Length: 443
Image (cartoon, rainbow, N blue to C red; front, side):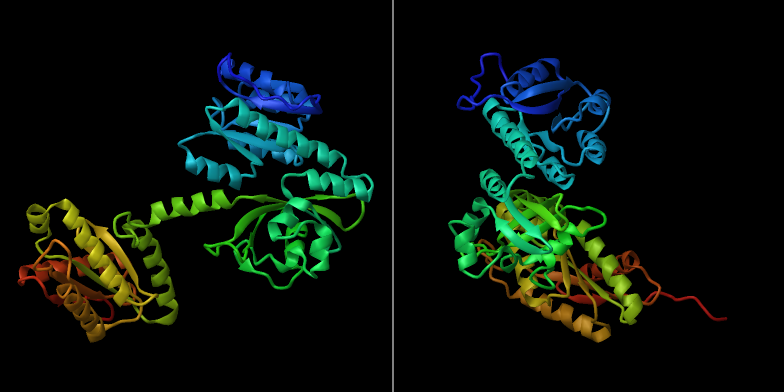
């Protein structure tokens, strides 16, 4: 932020009677941000590192924490965890770099109520902090009369549900509008409640209509739960994901549940997961993910007694394809081959790009001649592929290795690789079964 930055105002509102703790390492940025925060809150205190911030919290008990994720003496989210233990009601805003998508996901996982992208812009800062102090104010007044409570909840930009003994007493207007109703009265008149829309809690389907409330408020570990609410007008069918938090009222059994939309963060999380697990060119599993799934398959085999098979194959003369037709055509060959094989195998089989033009297929239950026959069918399928830019198509060589009890998957992969090498030496475009390992035992 620069000295000449134009700070947005709050339409004549006075600063809120709350305390904001601002933890920013850089002196100039800290002073600039504090100047903006003083327009929102009566009390603004600053710290340059996590240790100093924890000391200030002992005396000040801030309502809102704004911290950089990069602190000189500790991770910003470590500071959040420590202060949240002492001040569970404190609203938390974390500033992360614009290129730190993984940090955004981590901040949400650690319970951040808001995320700001660095460099922090005045307008974004005001919106985010003003929202937090508004929530602080709303929470302080939530003990008033029922009409006042409803008015406050309707002013809450987050979705809110007031419950008592697992019954929904009130749903605020922002959430009603999200569900397709003007207000709570219209929702009730329809005979439906939030419980009718919640499909999953933490990735699991609901046991009963009221169980989502019970799972949120009766958690002895006080964890944050993720709800999924699908909507009929959602074109992708995934719906929205929300982090559910709650505050207890003085009245026994009464809680205010707040739902914060994290759909974009969940999408980013899925994207990061795909980047870590899938081959970007072909879209199939990468070698890292294959290793994880192979370990799972071997554990299952120990219980069932049915040993898996690994089929390793590659494209014959792939360097010649690249040299003759270009690397773009080579990439298209890899995509076409991966797609053709993926369509031919079953959902329980695991196909991965092993590296370069090499692929690996895990078949949990194909043994002996069945495994060789499967590889032969795949070889013929690849041989018949019509690929743009490659007039004569491509062929492939296969090595097949069936696991034996006590043999780990890495050892089987080595045998499959050796069989593939023999297929290459034997003229290519063929299938070779690996030699069975020598199993020691007996006398």
